Length: 154
View (spheres, one colour):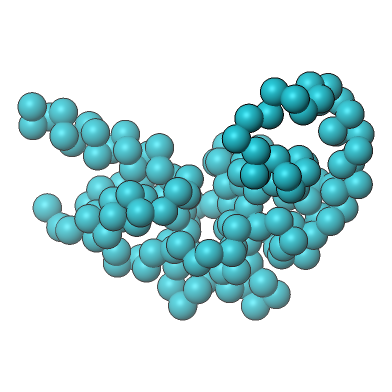
């Protein structure tokens, strides 16, 4: 078995978002993709970030929510938040994307993928070649494949 058999089996094709794409359109595309996040590219098709569930929450909810240890005193009416932040739908996804470059090369080993998921709190890993997106590996797909292989041996 080669050192990246698992990685090759779980790598998926994925649409990419453009950094200047409106947040509303990007959110719709994430939902349609069935993935928890999508890679974001610049005008040269190079990876510049990731936008997904966590980044959407960050765009929708006020910044102070990240700092709260307890949110029991915050108003519970979600409709008020949605109304107040409806204008964020036209903001560029580049303003909200996760910009830490957590991607892996196409020849990354299974162990490298596992280590990257272990050390970074990401839901997807873009697979790149010279910062061009070739696909993604989701944490949940990698977990399922790795756990399956583990359970076969027990």
